[in-house]
Length: 196
Image (cartoon, rainbow, N blue to C red; front, side, top):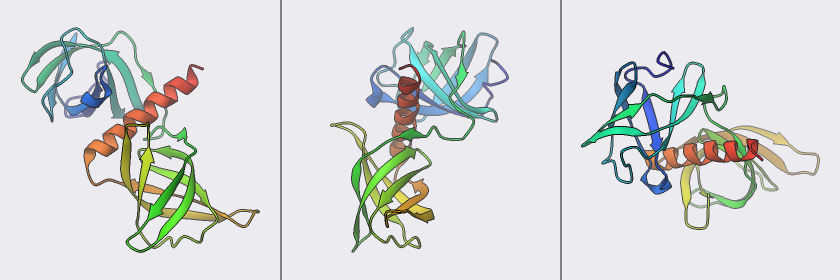
């Protein structure tokens, strides 16, 4: 496990209250613990209360559960986990996500149906002709009370047999919180789907 938790690596931490998700940088690695310098105050994190951890390694997206052993300001000392797993080899976890949403520029709105999403981008189908040279805003409804806004840049377009189109492309974000929220949402849904 120690070779997977490296100094200077970015890590996302999600306590039991999803809204208190935080991220930081691993600043120290010891045999039984590692220390993270958080970007935000550690709201919702309690000593010895389990949190979920996500970090990108050269082997894929690493996921594990552990708990803060010590919290001093924005520095938290985390117990090394007993076990871990890789969610998948690609950089972002991709999940099935079928919703009717609007794809917007300043003066155009396209009706689309999403097929799958990740924090890196999405695939969708539409009956409308979408200009792949433009950037679009899209709001993804993750739950009744939570949504994220992404900036979508089309990369590939395919014509379907029914006359419509399937497009895929990548996301950019206006803020890192939306990206973190979507990364966590996709990872969590991926685990739920796998455990069904």
